[in-house]
Image 1 (cartoon, rainbow, N blue to C red):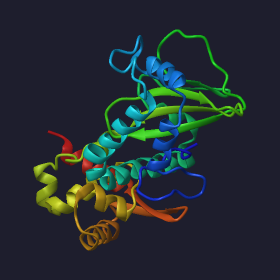
Image 2: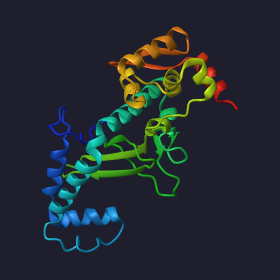
Image 3: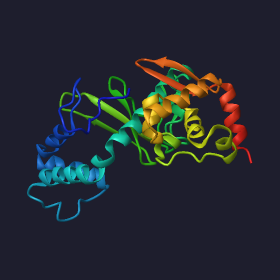
Length: 258
């Protein structure tokens, strides 16, 4: 369910993925009338001037996308990508461990909910149900604290649906969780920070991206925490994931208590 999205990088994608430049080329090649109609849907009403009468609307939109990518996304894309990969890894492990209900209920709390019998609620509005049978449902993590749903059908009738959801709590927060003084005194601030992040399963490289600590430091912290029985490790595909043991969870909750 994850995947199939654009890969915002400077070189051609692999395994059927399109890189950022290829996605922008699709926008630039769009017919002006179709681009205007799509933009009207995005803004939720008439397209304002001067865009509505622009002779090369697709070209202007493509140039805007390139500017946003170059000036606002690219400088911190590697960190954001690791944050999103951490979310995907953690949710995939949760899916394997606890099933669809647990994995989907947490996407957008209060809005998404697994209803059973092949039914998924995506918002709290009283809209008629929509069948996605025969289509592809994608789960798309983002770092802003918002989410939405979208769908598209290409010219071959290949329907795609997406649930765009915010990365889970701490993963979307580059500053990380506050380390309680008592836990910092017991374990050290850096090691306690690693432990706090392991409520959801994470790999060593993801912890490096999220904490800003070096690979060697994170590896040493994990070894100490594992030897102390506070975290466990297990393999999920090609990744080795760490999360709390019962003892680790009890320690964190106790040190968070006032």
